[in-house]
Image (tube, rainbow, N blue to C red; front, side, top):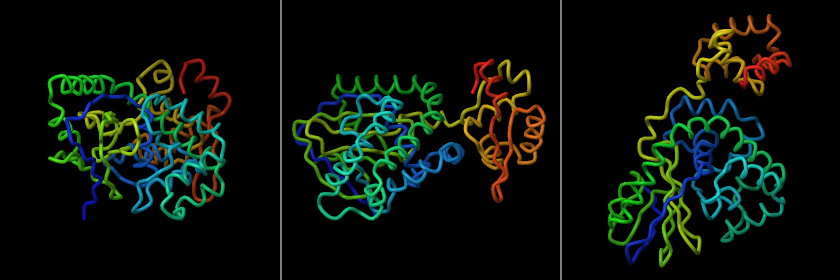
Length: 325
């Protein structure tokens, strides 16, 4: 059964467009880490999972609790403007823990705090730092893709602007995504929880994202504007192998696989993580790690069933020399 949020309109709305890397990062966190799958390719999902530490994985779990879509304002602000991800992550780390408690109370004012948010409420400082870490680590992986997608985003800004000028607002709203329908009374948005709002005199801010084909994030209750984030048209053309560095002097020196491997382990990773991330057979990863260890560029440590690989100081100096890592 499909659940809908309804945004009622009595007149043609005023449109604007905003570019927010922050919301792209939030969409990828929800899909790849929290478990609310929205069409992100498995290769990217696995790459993001492998690059986020345990505190980040633990912090994002409440974002995809079954039957809930409401989150505190400090995660998804009321306006998408100012979406620089490092700035957002730094702000979360500096946020007073009491602010998270206040946001949770406001978000769930109609009843008791849901069970999936209780751990965050009990340890707000730890939760904020964990979520900020997840945000930063996801963005470190996604930023090169975001830069390559600028032509798609610029084209979408032009499409929205043209529709606003030429009076094509209604067809545009109906074409944003298959989870958004435009009808006589306004917009219907496929959601986890049902809600109903009147647009009134507020404007609609459209926010194209780099995200899976089913990703839609909305804020319908702000007093000045509502915003709707949706996958930018053509995003499917961007889902190539994640974080594949170009062939450069370091690759020429030691070979592209070993250069890539050395760059991946800015934080320790398991051999299985590396095999998935680099799309290389586990036996090949073992072979290349043997050679890198012989060159005193990596360390290996067995923890239970997994072997963890990390960089040595010698490797850090080598990467610094080649401006890599």
